[in-house]
Image (cartoon, rainbow, N blue to C red; front, side):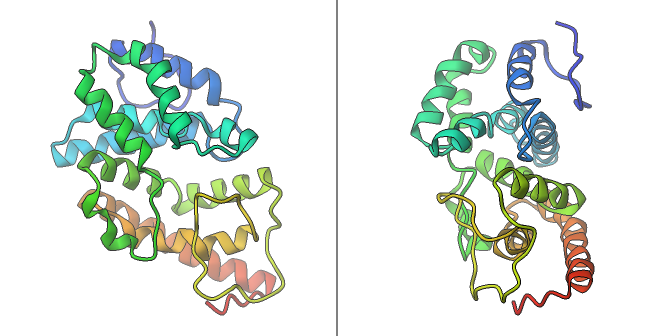
Length: 236
């Protein structure tokens, strides 16, 4: 199958082509910020981090591409895109496509990384010790896509798709923290303080930390400009 997928810059192995086609067909029209471009960027970031670490790049790129495959179902049904139903669906839909090119043990490592990629917590910067290296790579790649210029753009796409206002004319609640297990609430502006400003400190890998530094600084500068134009005071 000829490689002709939008946004893909890395060379893809032949055994991966049908999987990429399947993901592209489903996710290319997403308007929440979790579209095929996002899947591709996480795939390529995960592959690069794995390359630098000497980790299994086949696992990294596969987990990166598939990690948000059930986002549409989550929005429609409320069932988490990394929950038991989604994980079972990934096994049924992609097991036959990916094995035996991936050994069963490799495929299960992909599944495990996806099942755990949405871990967030107030001590996230030190909470990755119980994650496998595969899961740390996926989480770092996914978090990198949530900061920087791309992160800003995706945040407003996500807010619009979920009916969130741009900002609130009130102080943000103290100790606001993102919880992926509940529906989005508040405003797009609040999301920066609940989640995005914490992500750089939560990077697990050295390559992830290096890539996150400049992206985090962009978020900080954007918020300064945004708050100034809207006369907002986060009181954070």
